Amino acid sequence: MATLRNLTENALADYLNTQTVGATAYASVVATDKPAPIIICRVAGCEEEPLQSGNYRVDCQVIVKDTAATDSTFDTISEAVRTALWISDLHTQLNAVASGLTVIGASAPHKMEYDVDDDCWVETQHVELYAMPS
Image 1 (tube, one colour):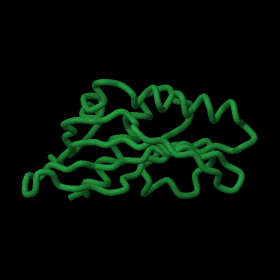
Image 2 (cartoon, helix red, strand yellow):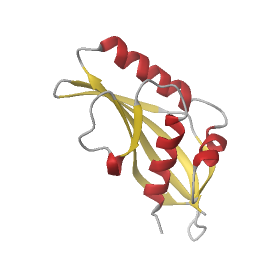
Image 3 (cartoon, one colour):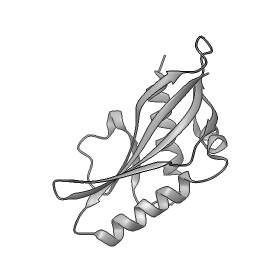
C-alpha cells in the first residue's frame, strides 16, 4: 500500500499538471535531476488528528524552482502555482485526481519561503491538507 506521503505528493503533482502553470510538477520521490523550471510537491510531515481516527493534518510543500537568469519566467510560474492552490475547493480538485487518498479539507498557502539554490530561484509554498488514505 502506498504511504500517505506518496499519495499526497502524487495528488498535488497530478492536480498541478492539470493546470496551466508553466512547468511540470513532480512528486518529490521522482523529482531528482529534473531540469528547471520544475515544481516539486513534497510532504514535510503529518500528524494524526484526532488520535486513532485515521485522519491526518498533512504539511505539504510545493516548491517552484527556476534558473535565476529567467526572473520573469520564475515569477510567472510562481504566480500560476499560487493561483492554482489558492482556491476554495482545492480538496475537491485533489480528490478528482487522487487515487487511494481522500482529502477532507485544505488551506490556501499560508506561508511562503524564498531561497537561492546555486543558480536557481526557489519559492516554497506551504499548504496544509486534512486527509486520509482510502
